[in-house]
Image 1 (spheres, rainbow, N blue to C red):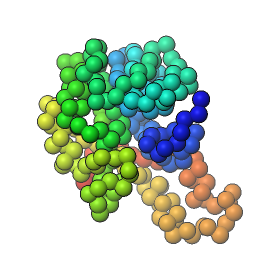
Image 2: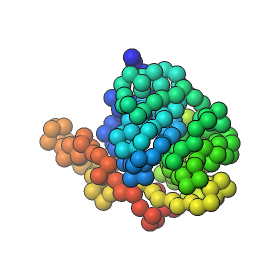
Image 3: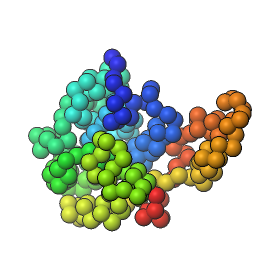
Amino acid sequence: MEVADTGERILLEKETPMMIARHSCAYNFAKDWVSGKSVLDVGSGEGYGSYYLAGFAKEVTGIDYDEKIIYFAREKYQRQNLRYLDLNAERLDSLKDKFDVICSFQCIEHIPDVNKFLKNISGLLKESGIFICSTPNRLDASPGREAPLNKFHLREYLLDEYRDLLKEFFSSVELVGVKRSRRLNFYRRFKKIGFFNFLPKELDPVKRFYGRIDCGDFIITKENLKTH
């Protein structure tokens, strides 16, 4: 089945290694929290992240509003403890089960009624459950602007805005950020300069680096989160 690349979500076969690595960092972080747990992945897209978490969790449910992408996920990513549901994130209150861990990565910025969304998330968590949610830092995603550059994003947040929003619905909030490693920043500067553009692709160290970039080229940290 072919899925249209609209730019709204990550499709592994059509994205750059850089984009895949950056988005995969959230799932890589979440894996340490899901061992033996029941997990809900809200905005699961093509399903690669739900599939990854199901390798560690007791059971995983991935949901997305797009019926075609759910069909694609069911065909491509299969595990005994993994299921996908065609469900809009604004209708989470229709779910009957409660979960140990709820994940939602690069999704909240797409949702019109964020308060309803977070209230529903809170209601679906077990008593000791945790919610792991990622969203772009506005300083990085849309520098110098209040309106998002990405046409699919309804709102992007600054650090304090995001923390205050989450505190309305959860008793304990801890923020970390995905930031570029020193090595990535090093090659990023050379890419901007175009220093090696005269070289053939196979000899260009910048192109070689970007061709094999992975989660190891990002760091997850609590430091300097107000900067991009």
